[in-house]
Image (cartoon, rainbow, N blue to C red; front, side):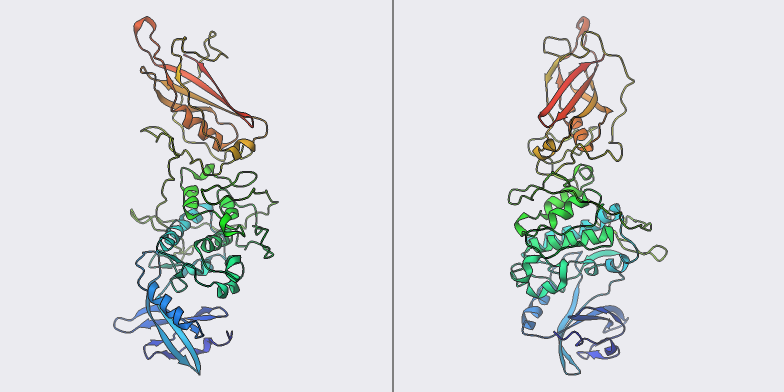
Length: 480
C-alpha cells in the first residue's frame, strides 16, 4: 500500500460523480477520510472513506455490502460504497454517517473516569456480542472507531468481516491487533484483545507495552482501578483461548457485581472453555489527571454520548444490566440487598480495601449478648436455635489469597417464623467481596421460633464469619 496514495489535497474533488470531498478529517497509512454531503435537499453531512484498491477489493466490497445491511442501533450506517479513480489511483470508497465526536479526539486531552468508562463499554460490548452472534467480527476496534452520531454511541462498520477472515492486513495496526491476526484469522477473541487495549488507553491515555512475545501478556499502565485492571489483563492474553468472553466482561461490569471483581494478584478468570493464567501484580504509575465529564442519561434508553466540557462532549451508553445469579443460589427477595457474584467470576482477596460502605439496612442499637449464649454455638436444643445454616460461596482463588483472617459480623433480625427479616453489617472487615458473600449467606439462615410462654417473639442474632485459607467458620450468637 502506498502511504501517499490518499492525499488530503484532494479536497474539492468529486467521487463517483456524486460525493464532493469537502474537508480532510484524517487518515492512516492505508486510508483517508473526508467530510462530504449526500445528494439531495436539504444537504446531509456524511463521511467518505477512501482506500486504495488491491487484490482483495472484491472481498472488501462484499464485506461492506453485508455491513450496510446489519440492523444494529450501535453500528454506523454505511450509506454507499463503490469504486472510483483519482489521479490514476484506483480506489474503493465507503460513505457513512457523520460522527460528531470520536473517542480518539477526547483521549489526548483527558482520560475517561471509571464511571464514564463503564458507561461507554456497555454498547461497545453489546455490539460486539451481537456481531459475534451473527458470525461476524468487528476486526478494527480502537478509540478512533468508537464514535458519536446524533448523541448516540456507535462503532464503525467498514471493517466488519466474517469470522475466520484473514487478519494479516490488520497486524499493521500494532498493539490494537491481536497477535494471532498476523498469520492467522480474525475471530471473536481477536475483538476481545482489541477491547482490552482500548480499555487501557481509555482509562490511562497510554497503550499497554508489549514486546510481541507469544508467552508474555502486555504490561498495562497501573494503577488501573478494579474491575478494569482484571478485565484488561484477561483480555490481553496472547493465547486467544485464554482470553475472557464478552459475557464475562459484561457480568463483571454489572453495578451489583463491580465492586467484587478483582483479577489482580492470585485471583483468576474462569470459564467453561477458557482459564486465564495466574495474574501477578505489577508496580504502578498514577493514572493521568482527568478533567470532569458530565454523564447525561437520556430517557429510559440511557444512551451515553461524548461531548467535550463546555461544548457538549461526553460518552453515554445503554443502561447496564445485572449479572447472572449464581447457579444454585437463591435470588434476592424483596428488601434484600442484591449483588451475589456468580461462582465463575473472580473475586477480590482480603487485601482489597473497602472503598465505600456496602448498602445495608440500619441495624438495631447494640445490645449486650446474653451470658448463656455469649461465645457459644447455638444448637437445636436452645430456644431460637439455628435450623438452617448457609455457608458463603467463596471461590478457591479468593480463599487461597487470604493473608491471615478476614472477619465479618452480620446482625440479623429473625421474625416470629424464624426467617431472617434484616441482615445488616456490624463490621464489614477489609474486603468487599467477603463482606458481600457473608451478608448474602446470612439472609438465607433460618431459626427455630423462640416461644417464651408459648408466644413467638422476634429475636436478634449476630453471625460472626471468619475466613481463612483453610476455610470458613461461622459462629452465631443470640443477643436478644
